Length: 423
Image 1 (cartoon, one colour):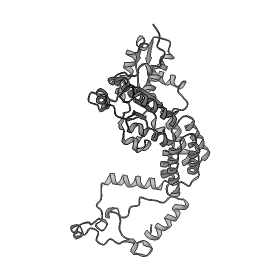
Image 2 (cartoon, one colour):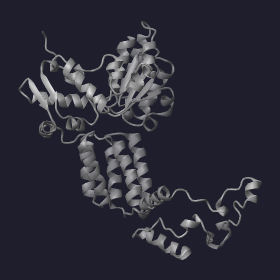
Image 3 (cartoon, rainbow, N blue to C red):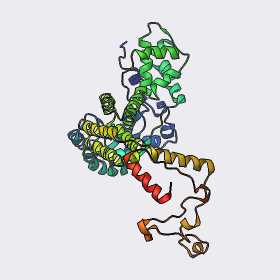
Image 4 (spheres, helix red, strand yellow):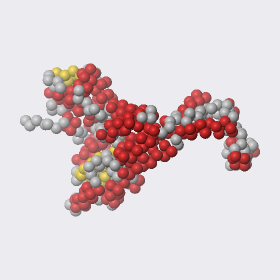
């Protein structure tokens, strides 16, 4: 009998909706996606969810079930020309099969606007049905016209129950694994390193078996950790290293070390990290760690994200580098971050306090008669566009949420606050 040399993850790829674990809300008996498959009426769709939860599997399952031509493109290595060639092939296929073929695009968020635009006409006129897969929020990563013509299905991260089913199916149904005596004594490390990714879980399981020369295998936490220490990749964009390296990058920028920031940026880019993820983190960093010490930092970071989204790699590396260096050498302040957290803590602890009458809106005569808006003083009617009056609830009148940071910009802010509020 011929041996099946395909990876375990491929051998165990579900062929029926009920074999896709963790997505019962979509593929269960009354799930909307299952109903579409059973009816054969497949809409264009975006499958949004974390890695390894079944996006590619669902696309292939749909194609096999409805018996239509199936095209597949990866946004990583496909361009506008590839899209147009596929559309032409789809048009020719329609001459022999009236049902529109399916086009699966993995990581569709990596497609530029022009690449996504090239799909629009074919989706709109029914030349093909688009199935896009993305790990990023499609509201930000997919152009609005394409998104409005597609149904978005959100896939869940795999919980422990789904992972249990996955492992059980692998060791009982796979032709190779079912011949072994495999006992899962402890599963915490196995699930931790897989990160809820079905493909990675099966790859780890296969690796554990490959490094063990007996038909009897007991899997516990120590065995998993010891085996993976010698085999896991140096940088894993969906695993622990992902969080360690982005943490090192953020702390290096916060610590005003541009050289360290660029090193960790290079590590992320070389490891395949999404440039949009890095750019988003720098927007947060600009607000949290630089803040009012240099308000322009937030504008720079936001412009960086827009440019990275438009340009893509490899040129995006230059834009990310410029922004990272700018943020690293900028003056730092977390005063805005501390202020809002202090205010939120108080609101949650004390509950809502009433709005002072003079600050209330008074759109009706009754409200005016009740004193809403009465005695409010319009600052622009006074010298310097300022007048002292109470803006906080009475019980909070003396509280200070915002404490200025010690930097050139906020020192000026501090001087102004002292001159007008005596604080």
